[in-house]
Length: 489
Image (spheres, one colour):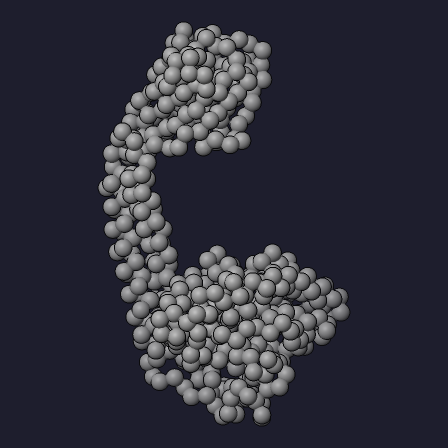
């Protein structure tokens, strides 16, 4: 496979009169682009999922989705070229998905008429693994967008070889006023590799990216070279408009990427206008939000059906131990306003069960205000549990004092003592509370297993509300995506 025939083409021209110091503030200047791209990449993720199923069932990548996703990659490449993916130009990137003929950075991807239904299942995660390893070295820490689409992270100059060489070039530029051509060529080759893998992982081609570093701003053997051409002001004023961009591009004689004539303009009313882009982005955000709501609702239904024991949604049992005199939870804070009006009705009654490792040995469990527990255990050796799910979340407190038998203290709001399993059922009021477990005779050394549960009377209503809200938002998001896709087709 040669660079000429690969369907992803990356082209760039180095500005010869770069500012020596502008690169120091480009991260600030590019913030508007970063904000917009974060939303565009959300749409990229959702539309790529739609394309995945379209390819799986039909063998075709919907062309309007393809044009949108190529536009997102193109926009990203321009911003990276301006910023710290290359620092190859001081010209501010345009806010559009379309190609801009006189901008010095370009990306074109050939539309595939047919794609393999089988490859779509494995190429983006399994077959591309060797490419991800290489691109991770180029981009740094695996921040490559195609590998972490869900994160919305489109910055691929994140400390890898690209970032290091661009920093070297920036320092040389500051002192000499020139960007070294050798570094530029190498940086462009690595960016070209990244974008090829991005297109492959984005399901835009079945051709495997070549393991070859094609350096230089222009791909050899017929790469698209764009020339400046006047564009009507009405076009340049609209973000994402269907400018006569393709018609302004000239192809080198002998190019394998075109006929040498202007590309046809899209029909009137077609393509990704600014309104359609905004609609697709909002729809994608709604779809992603609905996934969270539906997952939360389904999780509550699952918890209510599988973890409800004798009327209580109960956690798994965990084992805790201490060489001191007591096991105490971290402070449980129940704020008056929120807890009284919402939390108490949601949680209902709380049930706490504690069982000593020695069934014949009486165990004590009590609940008291945090300040009273602090006074009772002052100077005593005990352990605070900061991770109630078990594990190593513990804080050991040292001391030489011997506490009084816990049942003799009057600090407890609620307590139980005796051999076997001890259970407390508590309707928790607002306040700061601590739960304490001890040997009933206040001797040191304690190992218990414990679980906690809540009646959660409103669980069904909450789960139903999350599911219903998630479905409504999902339908709205789908409509906001489907309508612009259809009109852009």
